Each structure stands twice: as structure tokens, then as C-alpha cells.
Amino acid sequence: MTACAIEPSADPGDGGAPLVGCSITAEGAYAARLARSGGGGGAAWYPERWTLDGPEPYAVPLPGNQPEEPGTEVQPMGDGRVLVHRVAAGRHLFALLYPTGPGTGELPLGAVECPADSTGMRLLPPVPGGERAYALAAGPRATVLWRIAGGAFGPERVAEIPGRCSGGAWLDRTGRMLAVDRETGGRTKAVVVDLERDGEVSPLLQIAPDSDDRLLLADPDSGLVLIGSDAPSPGRERLGWGVLGSTLPVRFPECLRMPDCVVTPFAVQPGQVLTPERCAVALRVDGAFGSWVGVWRPAERQVRHLPAPEGWLTGAGLWTPDGELRLPCSTPRSPCAVARLVAPDTADAGGADRADGAGGAGGAGGADGAGHTNGAGGTGGAVGTGAASGTDGERPGNPEEEAATPGQPGDDPGAADTPAAAQPRPVPLQQAPLARLVTK
Image (cartoon, rainbow, N blue to C red; front, top):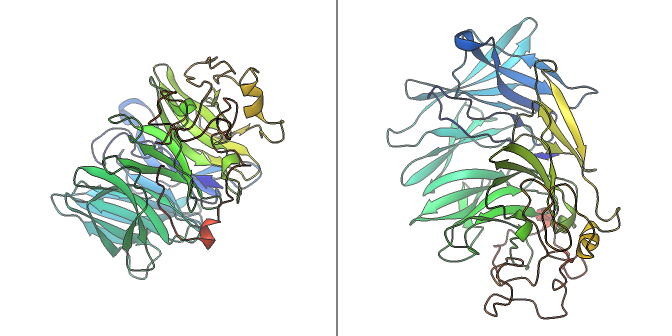
């Protein structure tokens, strides 16, 4: 299971909402969040662990000796313990929490004191395997990578990365290759940090010399990566996709361009080895009327828009290998629940992308064959030839941007961005060196 759950709002200690709404282990067995008891001025925050791999999900509260601050970070470990990150008097304190009958056991891991000019410290997404945990402490000129759990002596300094780093995604199942977004010289580029080679840094994304290229999400099985870049539209970030190890350019599908919404990928369907174009991607879509769920595959020309289930811990979720999207939810009636959505498989359905191109009606909020949207937030449409920058269907007819020749795969409005028949089969990430994703 591949999952990512980020709900940014407030820095630790600012008195706002929790920094992270819900975090899920890479394998999907456990989740953790900061829950609240009571209401009004008497509300108190406490860590809560969810078990997701049983017949029914259930939650275990892990309150400490005193209420947590709203900005406290929590992260589940593979053995069911919960890592907690607190900030007190400028120091970052870490501990592992676990249930002990009626109470909560706490194993202190140590503290890290960051320089005064740093921008704080935050946990990276859960490491595959769940035995280790890492954090980034970003300063104005360099970022320090810390191993918080899984070492021999508490927090350990692993590497210092030149530049100010943000983001974070694991590129393999062993927790060796970490991708971060590094800002240097006024530009942000995704780089790879090799944890088995003393934090050696190498480039990952270089779409254009003057573009900002961030890695948003990665799936180690297929090599599919979701990218945010302003290369196709200077000054405006677009959502695109590529494949690690592939020679194909990065693509920026028109259906992922929603001018009035913020689109954030948060989970990729795992287990699709050699078929990245069939990976289902879950999107969090934030618009003027709230948040909802989008489901998209690279082989499709539309986003299927679905209403968010009641009580969704917004932005949290995971896919199963067989294509079931699981969204953690909490309501007063059901404090611990999981909504299950099944994404239609285009291959099994006879090719939804081909049906759309023939004028068939799209899914809720998707685009029909004529390029019209038919749901809230949808901005799909028929797509023409691929552009040199990797965009699909943007400013058609511009000879400086067209990469495909007439009659080639990709010209048909109903064809996928990278048809399986025309796409070289990518080498699994575990068997290939990391390659840059460069537009053609």
C-alpha cells in the first residue's frame, strides 16, 4: 500500500490546528493522528493510533501526562508504536508512545536543538518497513537530515544538504533513496539523497534550467512520480507525471489543470510493476465549496470527481494493490472508520479513455469526448498532440511546442498521454539507476 497524508496548517506551537492531520505507514497497517477530547475552551489534544489491517479499524488513545500542543507531530511506526515530536523552549523532543493496559507508555528518544536561524524541524513521511523515522531541519543555507528513530543512540545527524530543503518522498522499498525539493539560487529542484552513501546528493528533476520542479509523490513499484513544475506555464505550477528510469518526457495532462482549485496527489496504487500508466492516483481537490476526492490514471484523459465521505481526515488515504481507495474518517457517531472506494480499471472496462474520445459520457466531474466538463471542479477536455514541454493539448497548433507528428500515437484526442503500445516498458526502480526526467 502506498500512502501519503499531509494536511499543513500551522507551525508547532502557534496555537492553530495540528500540523499533520493523519499519517499512515507505508504498508498501511497503522495510522496516527492528533485527536481532541472535549469541546470549546476545555478541549485537549492527544495522540491516537489507528489499526487498519484488521477486519475492522479501531483506535487506541495514547494520552500523556499532559495535553499535547496543537502543532505536535505524530507518526505511526511499523510495530504499532507512535512517534511524537514536541517543541518546548526551542528544543525538539522526540518519544515513542505505546499502550500499556489502561495507560500510555513513553520511551524518550532524545532532543535536537536547532540553530536560531533555522525554519524549524519536521518529520519526513513514514519510511517503508516502519523501523526508522527521519526529520529535516532546514536553515537558510543548508538543511540537516536527522534519523530520529531506528538508530542506536537516539537522534543522529545523517547528512547536511546544501540549500533549503522541503517536501520528501521515498523512492524505494528499503528506505535508502530519499527525494527532497532543494532551493538554491532562487530555484527549487528535486534531488536524491542516498542514505547508504553518507547522504550523497544527486539531481533528480531538471525539466528546464529556469523552472521550479518539485517531486510530490512517488511509487517505488512502478516508478510513477507526480511532479509540480512551472516549466510548461512560467509562474504557474502545473501537475505532471513521469516514470523513473524512462526516456519519455514529463507529461502535464490538461485534465489535471484546474485553475480555480488546488490539486494535491496523496496516494498512488502500488503493485503495478511495469505498468505505471495504469496506476490509480488519488487527488485531494480544494475549491471554493470545500474539498473532495479525485481519481485519475495516466492512461486516462479525465479526472473522476467523487464527494468526500463524511468525516474524512482530509488528505489522508491509501490504495490497495487491487485498486481500492481507503479513506480514514472520524465522526461523532463513528470516531474510527474507513470509507472504501473502488476505482474502475480502464482495461477491464474496455478502455475508458477510448470511450471518452468517442464522445461517451465521462465520470462525475470528468470530461466528455467534446471536451466539456460535467461536474464540480472538472477542467478536463479533449487533448491534442503532446507539447515539447510535456503539456497535452495546451495551445494546440504551436509548432514550437508540438513534439508528436501527425498520425503518431498521442494525436487522437481519445488516446492516453503515453499509450502502452508506444511506451517502452520501464525498468523497475529496484533494477535501474535513478534517471533525470527531462522534457523533450
